[in-house]
Amino acid sequence: MHEMSLAEGIRSVIEDQARAHGFARVTVVRLEIGRFAGVEKPALDFAFDVVMRGSPAEGARLEMIDLPGRALCYDCEKTVEIADRLAPCPLCGGGRLMPDGGDEMRIKDMEVA
Figure: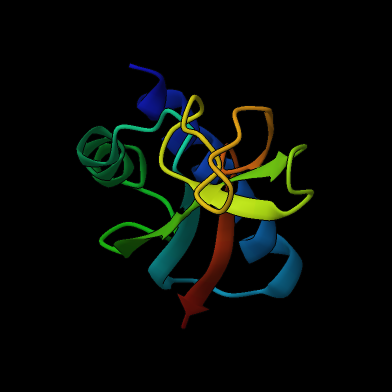
């Protein structure tokens, strides 16, 4: 379950930021997660609760924001949203697409006290 290591990475970022900015508690963490990031959200939610114990984010609410998959269509030369990596272009139906986003995961922001 790689979601546990993702949660550990999030904890590391939170602890670094707490030291750098002098806050003691995090109440909300907002993550942006791309459609193709391969993250199991229920597993990440569980891992987050477990890994944050004893950290500034213990008891914090995790909010996950979905980001769409994107690709550049070589047929119509537009950047489009796609539901999966092998989907045709929703504008022109072309099949020559280069994925251009949707595999990212990042902390968007945190509410701190």
